[in-house]
Each structure stands twice: as structure tokens, then as C-alpha cells.
Image (cartoon, rainbow, N blue to C red; front, side, top):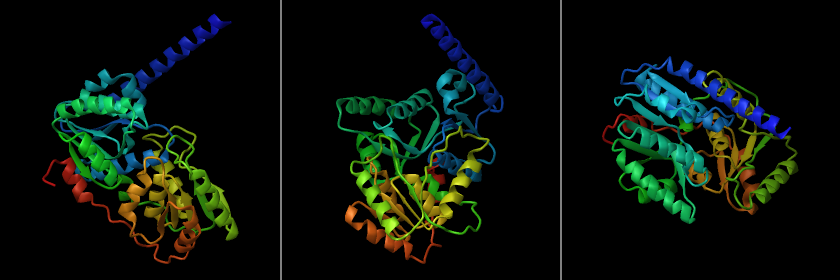
Amino acid sequence: MIATNKIRHKLGAAKRIIKRRMALRRTLSTVPKQGGKVVILATPTHGNLGDQAIVLAEKQMLRGVYGENIYEIPNEQYLSFPTLVERVISPEDIVVIDGGGNLGTIWDYEDDKITDIIERFHENRIVVFPQTCFYDDALTAKKKIEHNRRVYAKATRLSVMLRDEESYSSFSEFFPETKAYFVPDIVLSLVPKTGVVERNGALTCFRSDREKAAGSEALKNRAQTVLHSLGMNQKEISTIVNCEVGVQNREQEVNKKLVEFASAEIVITDRLHAMLFCAITGTPCVALDNISRKVSGSYRWIKDLPYIALVTDIAKIEDAVSKVLGEKDTARRFVYPQKRVLSIIKEEQV
């Protein structure tokens, strides 16, 4: 029985490899080998719609300059066959790496993937869209920083955008030879296609993974108690869907989630992109921080939006909820510095 299970496991693994190789060949057949194109490498195919909204926003911005000369290689395809991907990327191509919360030690494998891409394509123009950078105090983190510093230094045309002040400061200190830029999360550049929707009830959206901050459970419970005291209908939602998301259904899934946010009277969350979805849909929001402080870091960009409030003290949740619910100016939006980002991508003086 054990031997049979091992054989089945090996056959299953072999089938998955064959399936990924065939998928990559289909992808690569659409990518021209001549130089001058933009290739977004290792795009997510999981159901985290914050990550998917990042890719959607990146492609929308890039199309304004490069038209349809933009191609993407999904994450599993790149990780399975990176040498095959290398064959279609010429030295004249721009290599793009997604934004997100992936630099540092919270998601080690994502940081390692980014380092691999930079090392593999160090002769290319490489652009990393706005990231959070967070390294813990462990010895392994110091070794990772040293390794990454050597890799980044070899990529002389590498530009890294950081989406909060703390990340920008840390990255600049750890990697002084790399061009770093302080730029808002790219999702703030999205113009949602939600139409006019009626708002009804409250949404709560909380993390359950390693980015969850200490004490967040107490804040969550207090927030739900406050909403209950106001007699508001509450619905617990997630920015993660239980399906594969990619080129074919990315826009549809992100827009569906944005409509859900736009239909709420208020959202309480400790997820960065839940807060940003509120910012681009004009939805009142009370945001709580996470372990890497990327929520508070990005909040500084949108702190002038009167319907978004950041709370770190459990005693202030009730006041924050009352404030954003009573705010009438929900038409105001953050003005994204698109020209600056495009200047960075094009290596113009910024």
C-alpha cells in the first residue's frame, strides 16, 4: 500500500510538471523574442485579490506608455522553468517585478524569488513596483541582507520602489548602492468600475496569517462590538477568493470585490488592500495595523481622506467608527503620482 501511494504521488508530480511545461510553452509562444518589450515576471495566480489588484494596476499604467507590448509569465511557470523563460527575454527588455509585501523575512520564499529574478536578469533594466521591506532581527535576516546586497549591486539598472517611509528608510540603509524611490502602493492608481451602488451594512475583513499583529484579536472584537451597538448588519468578508486567478479572470474578480466594498456603509479591517479598496471606492473605513506596519505606512499617503481612519488604541475605535460614518465628503480621492512612477520606469531624472 505504501509503495502504491509513493508511485501515485510520483505520477501526480510528473503530471503537474508536464502540465506546467505545456502551459509555459503556450505562454512563451505569445512572447516575441525581439527586444524592447516589457515582461512582468512571476505574476500571482492565487486568490489574494490585493496581489491581483496590484498586477491589474501595473498593467494599466504600463499600457499608457508601452501599449500592448507587455507580457506576463505566471509564478508557477517561472519557478518551474526559469531557464526556458530566459530564452525569450533579450537584454533590451524591461523586466518588471510585482509590488507587494514581499521584501525581507516575512515571506522568505517571495524575497528569494525576487532575488533570483534580479540575479538572473541583472543585465536588464529591472523595475520593482512599490513594496514593503521588513527584515526581522534574526541572524538569518542579516545573512539574507548581505546576500541580497551583493545580488542587487550587480544589477546596475535596477530601480526599487517602496510604498511606506519605514520600508524606504530600511531599504536605503541596507542597500545603499540600489536606486530606491518612495512611491504609494500602485493599487491607489486604479479607477474602479463599480458603477453606482447602494450602501448597506458593515463589512469586517481581518487577517489570519503570519502578518496578523499582536493584539489584533482584541481590536477586532471591540470593533465588532461597536458595530453591534449601532445596530448595523455585519458581514465578515475576505480579500481572498478560493479559486485560481490570472490573466483571464483577474479584472472580473477584482472588480467584483470592489463592488462589494463600494456597497458597504463602513469597513473595518487590518488588511492593507482592504483599506486601499475603500480609498478608491470612497468607502468609510477604520483600519488597524499589521505586524509589518504596512497598513499604517500606506495610511500616511491617504491620511487626508476624511472617510479613512487608522486606529492603534482599542479605546479609540468607537470614536473612529462614529467619525467615518458621519463623514459626508466621500467623493474625495487620492491623486496618484503617475508621472513620477512612469519617469522612474523610463529612467528619467526624478
